[in-house]
Length: 113
Image 1 (cartoon, rainbow, N blue to C red):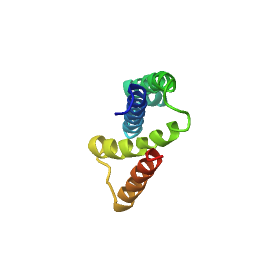
Image 2 (image 1 turned 45 degrees about the vertical axis):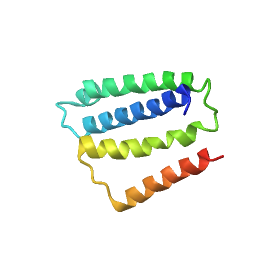
Image 3 (image 1 turned 30 degrees about the horizontal axis):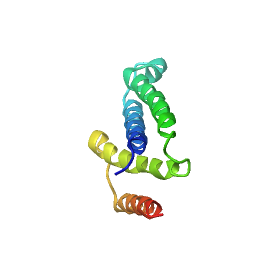
Image 4 (image 1 turned 90 degrees about the vertical axis):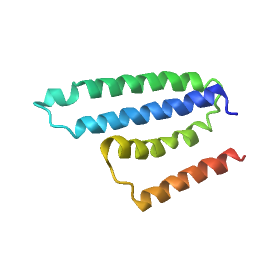
């Protein structure tokens, strides 16, 4: 079973993926002025989530090896694809599925070591 630190790291990747989807949903909306485009609850929440993930990642790196971090961070592509479909209605194309399968295969091969 993965350590709690690795699970924290993966959770931080999920949280930052949610933050990215929030930023995109804010960018897709019409705003009354330029200031409101950057100062609204979606943007503020997304940046707060990104700050929280920075702290989670720092804590996780107490036990997660530095060489493993980028491998697990690539799960963000998977999370963003699924969250984009669920919350933004984005299309999932066959090329994206192929890319996600390659990412998952890469993670699997890396964890065999």
